[in-house]
Length: 142
Ligand SMILES: Cc1cc2nc3c(=O)[nH]c(=O)nc-3n(C[C@H](O)[C@H](O)[C@H](O)COP(=O)(O)O)c2cc1C
Image (cartoon, rainbow, N blue to C red; front, side):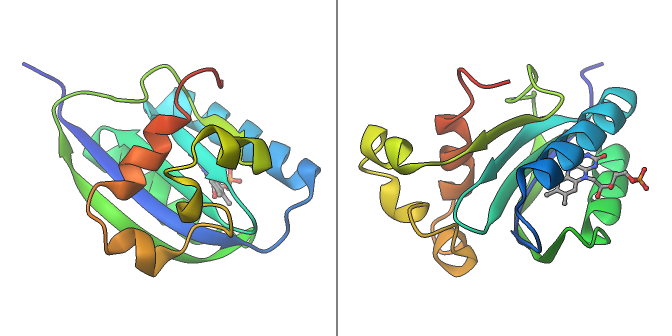
């Protein structure tokens, strides 16, 4: 029987973007995700987060419920949520990439979606865009 999998993508606004806060978030995410069978990717751009979580549906829901309560960010908003046949970010307990001006130059066609931070309304209006942005950065980061 294939594994039942769910993929959830959300955006949020960090309440504090000190490097130490980001590393603490990542360390906690990686520890819990290893135990819970969750993989994914977290992107940071100009005062915003975009994250994908994938794994067994119950584990994804429980993890997102905890994440929503976390005071280190606010305004969590789901961009997409559905069953998937396989993991797309299976190599990462939680990959992380902080987007910079260099990324805007590297991906000029996508730069408008992250140069000034992830804009939930704009991203939501384009089905598939959130996943496309996450995929762009899913190579070469760990
Ligand atoms: C932007 C962001 C992303 C996070 N990603 C995850 C994650 O992928 N998995 C996870 O278990 N916790 C994640 N967390 C941390 C949870 O909110 C929570 O702190 C963690 O699950 C552990 O709970 P605990 O500190 O009560 O042990 C994230 C938090 C933030 C702010």
